[in-house]
Length: 451
Image (cartoon, rainbow, N blue to C red; front, side, top):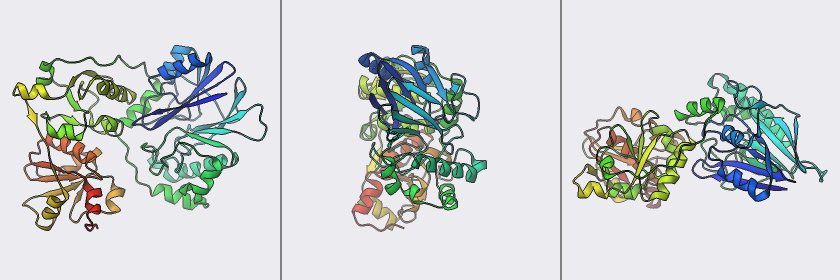
């Protein structure tokens, strides 16, 4: 028996390839399916089953693509928002044999109504299950968010409580295989560790320490989560089914960089590259942050021209965008040098340090705003005096009260999200923007006070 975990960087999505005795199954596949086909070839196994733990919100499922490629049957839970057009329904108690492995279905609603967990047994071992694929019901160090049904907040939180009790009954020896790891937007307190057991989670998972059902519901309802606008498109795509991703983007000519037409220039090189020189009105989202912020800030009805350091970074960025439904990448360009040598539309972004920000806080320039673009929980846990909060994903709407002609210093935890936010402000006409590099980490390291 072989179990391989496949991690999708950026999204922190986890899928699994299970094989035994020449048969295989895939749990929660991503859209780019080559890795599963390669594993099947290595094992000399046939992919018979594709299991989905729930309707994903943060990425497009690869189940319909893998089904088309292999002929395997896709299984999905009951009570979806709409029928899952490419899958058959499976319910609690159903069993699936994959060679010497056995999967039993548990219904574990709460995160979504159609949530399932698949309990893994070794048929030669009789002392209980060896593992469970928990989807987004139970994470390592956290549990699933329950805010996708705003009219049923307490009901779905209660359903998750009941589901977690069911999972706790599988035994302390049972390994936990969630659908996401640390860094995913599907939870907020996941441990930066990708292995655990039911027994370990019972003792160490903060949400599992809440023994009272009503107290658990209160805690879940009180959580703050952001719902990016692209989640709804992912939900629709994962009910209808998606096609294979388009081919990797090709290099573009310098003329395209000088005049991209209606394409969005998306600079994925990194915040220091962007600050040193970028195409005017381009949007900065470093390639390793695309999964978190492209769905917030990129319009889905315009082509995208990537500005990358090299072809590898461009292809990686395009793949990440395709995983969340942005297929219209028209090409890529290496760096911004042609803009300089051709006297093209080139801008730079200023960084300021702690000393400069402290001086401005003590003696604010006329009309100056210190804009903190962290999540609201981060801001409420400590912020700089007189700073204004506006979450990076909700710019520029959240900054509509600001005067674009007045100075703005943008900050976050370290400076990365602040640079993304600054690029958004500059795209929308803010002419006096700089970024506090180091941001909150630098501020507290210097011993400065917070409120």
